[in-house]
Amino acid sequence: MKMKMMVTVILLYVSQHALGVEVFEGVESVLLPCQVTDSVSNDSTVVWSREDLRDPIVHAHQQSGDDLEDQNQVYRSRTWMRTDSLQTGDLSLTLRKPTIRDSSTYTCTVRKFGLDQSRTEVQLTVREPPLVWLKVLAAVLVLLLVLSAVGFIVYKMWKDRQVQQVEDGAESVQLPCKIKDRSGVRAVRLSGDVRVEWTDRDNRKVHVNQNGSDRPEEQDQVYRDRTEMKEDLLRTGDLSLTLKHLRVRDTGEYTCSVYKDRNFMREKTVTLKVKGQQVEVEEEEGAESVQLPFKTTADLSGDVRLVWWNSYGKVHVYQNGSDRPEEQDQVYRGRTEMKEDLLRTGDLSLTLKQPSVRDTGRYTCSVYKDGNFLRGKTVILWVKVKQVEVEEGVESVQLPFKTTADLSGHVRVEWTDRDNRKVHVNQNGSDSPEDQDQVYRGRTEMKEDLLRTGDLSLTLKHLRVRDTGEYVCSVSKDGNFLAWKTVILKVKGRNKGVVETPTFTNRKHSIDPTPLMTYQSV
Image (tube, rainbow, N blue to C red; front, side):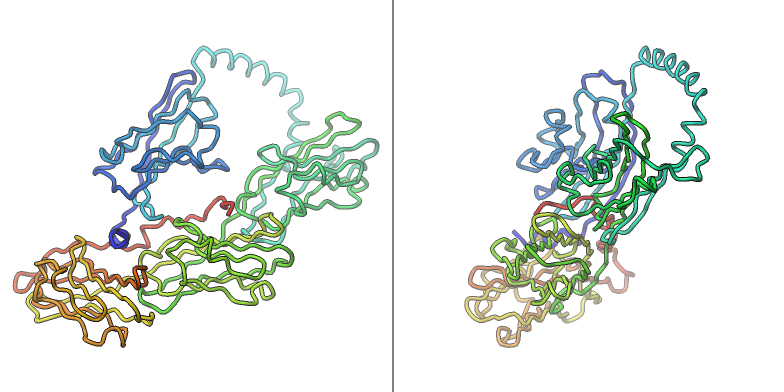
């Protein structure tokens, strides 16, 4: 039930451990260990990932089995997990035929409803076999002798290797590449048949210029209309590249290669780091609405598509002046809203109505223009839970919940506890004691005119320490979910000091606030 999902979110706790595994290349397989103390919930997903890859998913596993749809193709048919891993807590990953390229940090993440419950990092080092190392060492010694003769030249070529750092969403950044004489001061004029190629870490062509003229037909579509070089580059020797509309996934190395009369002449590498922007928003559960901010100065003319999404799926979709509710995940149907003139003003903020604990998490807005990604923004939303504290033996306590939702029609209100027992049920304005758990018989009360006033607060009588826990009110209308509210109740023991009660995790430590390194194609 959805109510179980809401209860679990509050108790998330993210732990992180670091392990190291070292093997020689050529072994049949290697085991990347990941153990959790208890079995994992049926609603959880285990994701093995490698953040230094553009497609970071190495292996994903759910209760129903492996989910390899988004797996990086490098790992296809090379990974394996136990079928009973979620029951046993042994989430270790077997990687077949490891190579030196597999050396990296692998993260084993247990997620539930989009939130991280635990994270384990494993550093895998794959080395060449010892005999190979002897040969390599001999070759390196010979190479060092050769390099010593040309060391000065190599140093001059690479001494200006640079790192450029900008924010996600920046208008542009310049990747420098200037051809100078041996003194390193004066620019070199380029004549003859000159070809300049800028490529990225995946060897995709970012920009190509032949004899002073751009060649957009050779450019990878990811960079179409996003690059620019100077008009007089052959005269000045300034081959710097301007890259526009920066996004996190542009992070990486870019290489400027220069060819003259079809012969290699010079090469320069620039490292670009694009830092993700994210904003944190905090609101209390039960509020009328909360706004996830995003404003941009980008040109939003043409075929523009906006997608707000999170771990559940698409939160809100907008295309060419109209919302697309048919593409929206049902959890958010009727709960989201964007401004009417957003394409003119650039205000792409999203209003989320009746925020609940379940809505806590990371939200990303992706902007596409004419089918190409244009902008992205990440917002972290924290929805706080109402807490009520009383002493054991008090006559009663009220668990508050007021809503402005339309409560006409067939309306069912259910209050449940942390064990999913029914505390109180009201159907169409009338209590249903026959649906109530016996623990709460004769101890609960709701107001008579609750559907008219929207006051769905619950009065719980004759308090005892064991009543401590989470209470969730779920409201459905005509069989469809309408609203919910979570309240944490702490009952302290009298005359014996405070009786230890369950600890409710601060959710700000339950979500990894690291910005997303890639954008979904949505």
